[in-house]
Amino acid sequence: IFPKALEEDANAFCQKAREFDLLLVPSDSFGVKGYVRLAYCIDTEKVKRSLPALEKLAARLWHSAFDNLIGPEQADYMLEKFQSAPAFSRQTEEEGYEYYFIVCDGVTAGYTGIAAKKGERGLFLSKLYLAPEFKGKGLGKAALEEVAGCAKKLKLGYVYLTVNKGNERAIKVYEKFGFIKTDSIVTDIGNGY
Image (cartoon, rainbow, N blue to C red; front, top):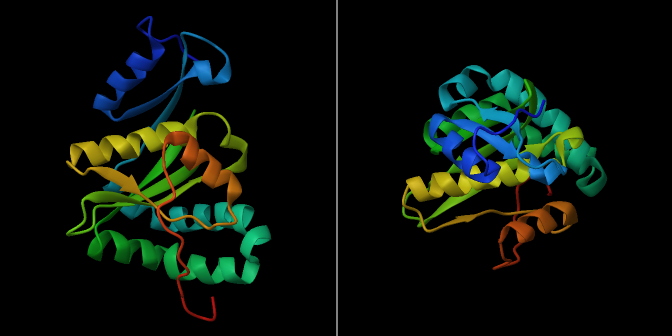
């Protein structure tokens, strides 16, 4: 569904919609000027009540994205350690993370997780995952813009993230959005990985 923007400038209209927690994607990224695609983020409290659904979504998106890159065994290990309902609960309650479902046209398209860590001047973009059928539709860009807006609201100077060096598609998306590589690290996450 592509409703017509209520202003001539669809980009400006999408920016104004964010004041009401509406995530709209200008349809010019889909080749249609003057229209928007509807998406929205659900607040953190609703996400906490939805941790089992978030865990299930994470498993589906992770296996789709990472089985060929790191193997299903490591993906399962990382899901349990970082993307399970208990992990999400710990992260939101103890580590200051916020999670948001990305919903487009009434369908859950993905999710994102951010954290403003104490003593840091930047906002950590911990997770941003979209279902394969929603990639290339402008939702990733819209989510990154929303994350940048969160950093600005929190008076943080930048957004930073980590990404698997073999995840070339994600790296290209982040670089296109303006992220730059500042370091290359190897992190021991346990269990021989």
